[in-house]
Length: 122
Image 1 (cartoon, rainbow, N blue to C red):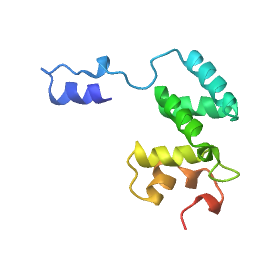
Image 2 (image 1 turned 180 degrees about the vertical axis):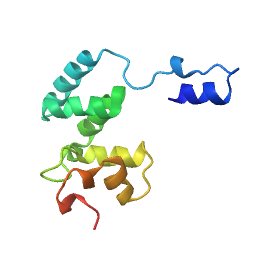
Image 3 (image 1 turned 90 degrees about the vertical axis):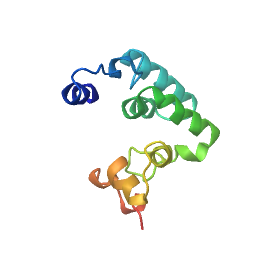
Image 4 (image 1 turned 45 degrees about the vertical axis):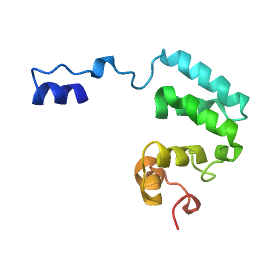
């Protein structure tokens, strides 16, 4: 999409988007397999590892490294949420969420997942 915008507003400029490493730089099946194994080694479900690939692309490894360093980040934000505390931390640090409402409503979309009130800001 960024390349389309550059092409439209500056047709004589060459967009660098095609040369940027964005998203996933390995085959999806390989990323799923690797993330599932790594999540399992940390005591998480394989689905959690695959979800990190969907959410963070190549940065799924960062999410798991944070959990390895701080195991409390593996806790779910609520019993009925497919979201872990590491997702909340990453929303604040890498997605620049400024408020807890921004984290819960816009970044993690907990309010649209039907999550219990325990995960929502006070």
